[in-house]
Amino acid sequence: MLKGIIIEPLKRFNDERGSFTELMRQDWKEILKEDRFVQANFSISYPGIIRAWHRHLRGQTDCFIVLRGALKICVYDEEKKELDEMISAGQDPQIVRVPGRYWHGFKVISNETAWLLYFTTKLYNYDNPDEERRPWNDRTLIPESINGKKDDPRVGKSWDWNYPPYK
Image (tube, rainbow, N blue to C red; front, side, top):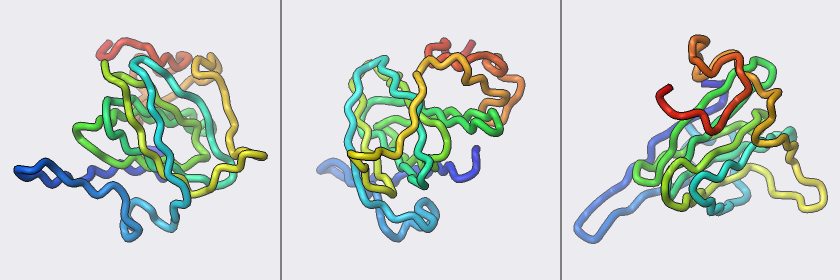
């Protein structure tokens, strides 16, 4: 994984009434490091929707938690030409921590609407947003390794969010 990306499973406690899951705690230093979250956001996306690419150059870190549906989350380091791809789904909750300096985005891969809760370390500035964007289908985003592998058949080609799985 790229430096600073953390994937941490969340514990779901089940009983005869249903379940309980802690989503974020201030004392989770293994995830937060020195970060302190100042804003929480909730995003709803329909099946097949791609929300990519953007990055934050003023030090923002995001922590994603999929509450419903499933997402393919991708993070790209433009300097190293490395892409990390992970699947996160509501039925198996986890936190995905993404340092904002990396290009990142996601695609809904479930047949149901996806609900994404995410925490940020910087407040959104309406007048001067900390967001640099590029199109989701930017042909210049060409990874030289994917999940640390250089033999992935997608290496050396423009990133294709719609590449069929298991090809």
